[in-house]
Image 1 (spheres, rainbow, N blue to C red):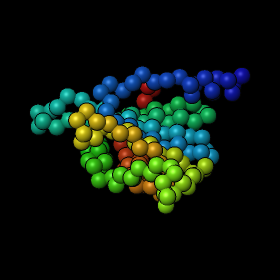
Image 2 (image 1 turned 60 degrees about the vertical axis):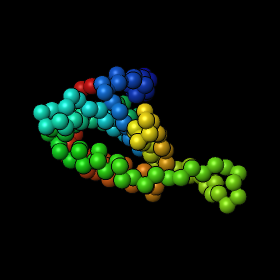
Image 3 (image 1 turned 120 degrees about the horizontal axis):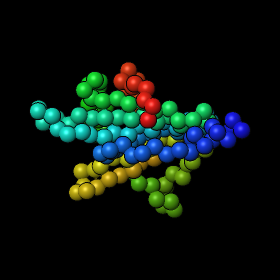
Image 4 (image 1 turned 180 degrees about the vertical axis):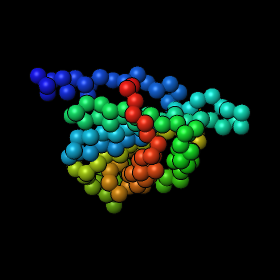
Length: 154
């Protein structure tokens, strides 16, 4: 019975974070823990800056845990958002092209980033695994954001 309750808790979707424009996540293949950070903006303030609001959702077999953070109380959020522009994007690797690597990884940690691009109304989602430029940026972002989080009841 407890297992069923725990599984139901992990299946309950949270309402979308208003004004969410980006998110990144990492999901452990062996520990079955997924951590997702949603990034949203509020109204511009008097200095014409956007305040940022972040929500961290940690999903595991124990259920969902949710934390919130904002740039007014944690200025490092602005550094994390700005550093997104410096991510070295991977090149596309279509299968069947001579000389193209087809390596696969079945364990480790899966990483994902969805964000707008410089294209008009463009957005891209990039998924990768350990040691990629996306993984390095996401792991560094989680470390930088650690002191920012405050527990939320959703």
